[in-house]
Image (cartoon, rainbow, N blue to C red; front, top):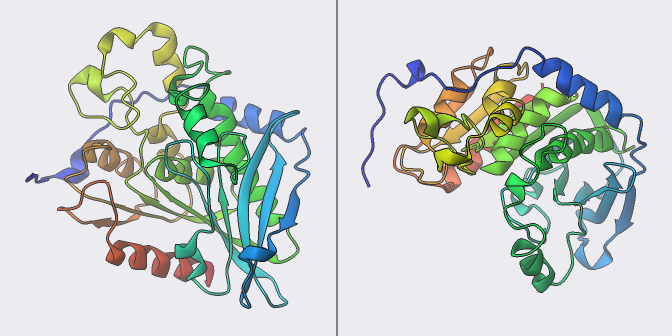
Length: 311
């Protein structure tokens, strides 16, 4: 594969911003705030080290809905900066985010988004992936109030509130990061929760979801690759979930990295979102890379995040 970019700062997305975008999400946050977080941390002695204590965590994301994750905490007194790692696509278990533990004296929290525990047998996730959660990214897409990602976006925003409420976290120093779907959630979470000080995204998905309709590449999950699926109801819903529209409203410093050879998330969709950010982000383009990260990108992200968290 060989690709090239020219005048990439001029790429314009096709995503339409609805007039009531802010009102819709502020209303959703206000409704969510009526439900207590009730976080529960359970020590995992077998995962702890002399440097870190490790906990399973769960908190409420609805009256009967929970978000589950895993937290690492430096094994020393004090308040520490924190990083929330939001997940890429799929249905799977989660372990300690070792790349974040390497940051040093930082609290890390890695969450799942599907409302199921993160430490069950692998066959459970496989069954859900091919059963009840198959094509989860399309569930209730015809209704903006019921679309699957509404609880996901809100749940990630609430995860920041959980971190901010922990005794050992400095609530003024919280960052969020992730790749692909997690890159998308990094941007949406930064918009939805002002407690986020900075966000770092690898090849964010879910940008310019209507690109296919204009013969312009778009991102996972390819909602309208089959143009017959572009019904009035679905097109109306995605206006409120397209990451481009969140990018247009973001206020925090952001770091974004991607490659021109990405076959999962179209580079034009990523750059189109970057070009809408009112505060120019720091961008690391690795032209030859596809839907993966090199160690240099990981190191650059970590260095940038720590710089933001130590200001």
